[in-house]
Length: 402
Image 1: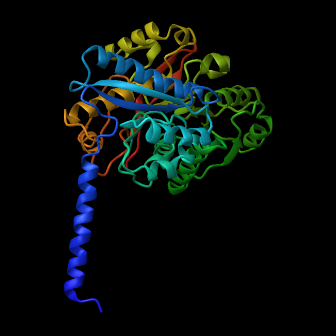
Image 2 (image 1 turned 90 degrees about the vertical axis):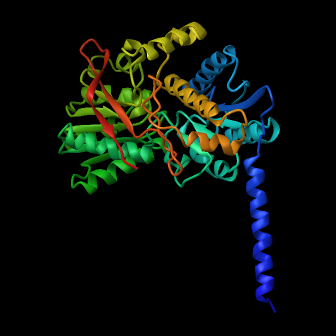
Image 3 (image 1 turned 30 degrees about the vertical axis):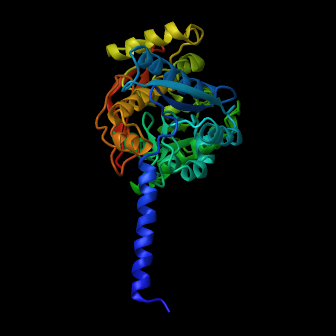
């Protein structure tokens, strides 16, 4: 028989164990020495998602090298351990485990692509003691459901972006017959689903929905079906290469509706790839300024640093979106390390990130975290392609609410 005294003793013992676990977590200094802190950078440096992984790594290299040249943060240099997941989810999971279990890093920046991030969700959830910082990929699964160790800033997550895009299309573009072309992977599916639900909620359901694969090059069948619905606005939720071809072919097939693309389509070479059909097309972009025509001196300085450090990439019309987001994220990450102080622990770093409010780098949009908030950015800007095919930011912003 269990007596009240036995029960009280059990509760007391459980409290001691739990308290000990919390104490151990609070003192977790994995990857930290008196003179250095080891940070893992996980991303797709090769394969179909390479542009995003390269951006994740280049941002960390520029920011952390500059930090080290100035003497480090709170007396510690930052050591980078980089792993290429080759745009493969299984390799990304293995790479994360290598960084955490073998390299014993303090925290991980990455991964860098939505399809890979979605596949890694159970891994990120299980590694609850390891701070994970996402700067580029936008799948909601990174932070939904809530994970105390996972933070994201830079992109607007696809659930929130779909909501914000739906409102923008109705309120700013005055769309009444909206069509959607969405990529079949995690990125397009999540954003497309959110946009679909938002328009239905507001009494303007989509008149046409078509899907495509990342590697597709001919969209004639989808666009001919879409043309029958006579849309006045066409939303493309996908990556730059297929989105550019869809835009060009849509105009060739006589679709005249306003075209707006999701954040991933805001590529610097997009209008040149599309050609004259790009004029008037809009893209959502989660940057504070455009790297090719920066008004903010902080963006201009970043472009100078990137060009000097990575001249080969600069000749490819970079830095581009992924590069800028990677740099912005590394700056926010470094700010968290500063706020965590000299007595650096994983728990202390998480608590320090939670104090960041309206932090601006001049490259990404303002970052705010909190004890119950892991999505650092809730807004995006909109750009429009001009007659000379240059990109121009326009005044209205898209904003989402948690």
